[in-house]
Image (cartoon, rainbow, N blue to C red; front, side, top):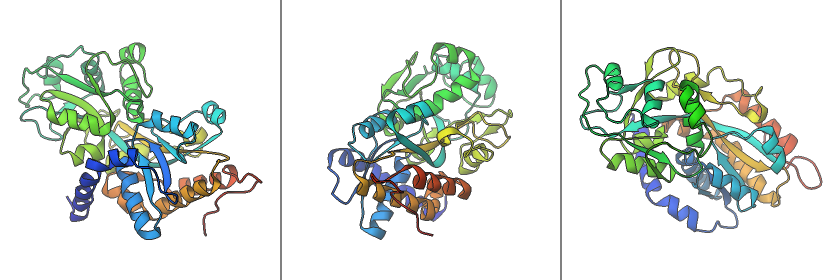
Length: 356
């Protein structure tokens, strides 16, 4: 691992240990930018917020409460923006008079705790993963898993499923993939931010899943990749749509996003699961920001837009260090045109015009 990336992950570890509680409990300062939602994106928003405050003096008060709770806080005007990993459709956006735009792409990864199995050693395909999560495959040395891993020393230990019990965009991305690879999953469980899991134990947040899987022998769960690396969890390689066993990485996330038609999707609502391509990671997804078209606090909204403009312009390297994929330049340009056209002052006209 490059020294720079190692430093980023080490400092992030310290932040994640205490910042989630502190951010959720401490009121934002008057000059701070307030947001809430996705734990998927929390590592990079924390890193961006710290760098932005150092450069501008303006802080970011971001509460990693999960996508559903973040949207609720925005609806109640408790925060200036919400972050969600499940894109809203145009009907829902219009109902709340929201604007939606993507900030990054990353990957959701299955993680396991099996004695003797190192990161990337275990291979699963979509059908087998779905069968585990449906409770049909109950032990790690099941024939279906052994067939995919003929050289692995798999124990007879029971499988313990860990899932998100809060409304989560990470869950949406993960279950959207399961919908596409398992007809039984699609008809019996489905895909949204919170589903009725057939088996397992529910915990809150990416950080809760990471801690539970890390501490429970025989466990399997799913987290955003930064949490897997940061907590030194054993990630699984997956068979993708092209039939290739791929590992999670910024390269495989980028491959999944390579042909996305961002500008052609309503509200930029691209979903990147089970994408074609031999190098594509099959459980990739974007994370999105939601804001009011006519904010009740225009000054706060303008400050938030300045922050995201700065993140697009200067935050790409920080994103890559944490294995997020920055948005392409054409998408950034389209997003900033959206701001100018739809996030308005009360008397009309754009709230924030990015500097040339």
